[in-house]
Structure formats: structure tokens, C-alpha cells
Image 1 (cartoon, rainbow over the protein chains, first blue to last red):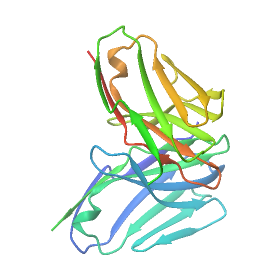
Image 2: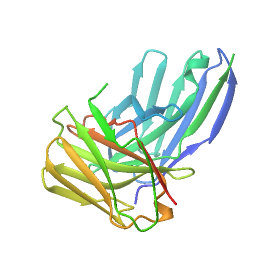
Image 3: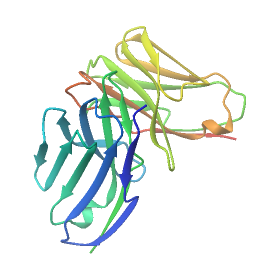
Image 4: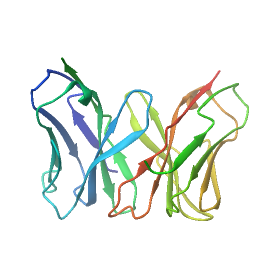
Length: 111
Length: 113
């Protein structure tokens, strides 16, 4: 069974600082890894999807890396803003077309 | 935003009563999923569907059943609700899970008293 862990569970940074969110998974037999954002009381919004053959994916200030052999992914958010405050979820896609989610990292960016 | 709606958005019910949650999509995606989200557990898959009348269990399927008679609708039923099923329920859709992301609905907050 795929286990996904996100550390830290919560993070508070001043505006402008770069954010580094970590995700680890136990089974390297994956077909993709995804990062989602969730605002309080809302559904999930997809941020980045990395295929298993890729090493990283970028979108604006967001960059996600994937090291399948070590079972790790990192989401970098450059020059954080108060609007980046949310919970960030990592999800791993396995061969049976299901996603396994981590518990999330709750980010607070202080103005 | 992907066209996904969930109904009802909020529900309070009594222990032992049946409850049905509905997920409706306008994207014609093949795959549909039901998750529950609880503090400290993240999202856990309840059931999913890979086509009309094709469904399978997720990791927390006990006490839940699903049906999909049309591409656009995926129903989740709690046959006899229990307090442990108090949660936020999310529906998601995907066209191709190996290459495409999942798009999530707004969620249904269910409270079982």
C-alpha cells in the first residue's frame, strides 16, 4: 500500500520568503505525482502534475521536482505572498489509476 | 473550472438513516471518484468508477455503496449512517488518470448525529 508523508504539517513564513514543501512516498512504482492547493472550506485545485518520466515541472512561481528512486518530491514556491496561504497536498498516482494523498502542509504567509 | 457539482452541499442527519450524495459532471470524463477528508487523514478514496456501471472499492469502502447509471452522475449512498461517517465528501473526475489530473468538486459536509 502506498504511504505518502508530508513534512512539515504546518509552516509560517514572512512575505517574500521562498517556500519549500516536502513529500515522500514508499512505493516508487508510480505513474505520476501531483500537487494540489486547498483553501479553507473549498475543494482541491491542481497546481502541478509530474509524470514518472519527468524530473520537474514549473508553472510561474511554482516548481516541483520528482526523485522517483528515493521516493521524494519537493514543491518550491518563490517569493511567497499572503495569497499563497493555503493547505498544499501531495498525491501519488499508482498503477491502478488511484491517487494516494498526503495529509498536507498548511502554509501561512505573514504580510 | 471543471464542471462538477455536488449536492447537497451540507447535510445533517440522524444515526441509522440512509443518505445519498450526488456528483454531477458536464465534462464527459470517464473516471469518477468519491473521497472523504478528515483531520489528520488527508483524502481517502471510498469508491471510484471507470465507466457506466463499472465501479470498484477504495481503501475505506465499508458502509458505502455507489452507483453510476449515466456518464455524468455518480451517487454515493450511506445505507445506515453512523457518527464515524461525519466528514467532508469530495467528488473528483478525470479523463485519463495516468496523464491527466483529477478535478474536484466543492465538497459536501455531512454531519451524522
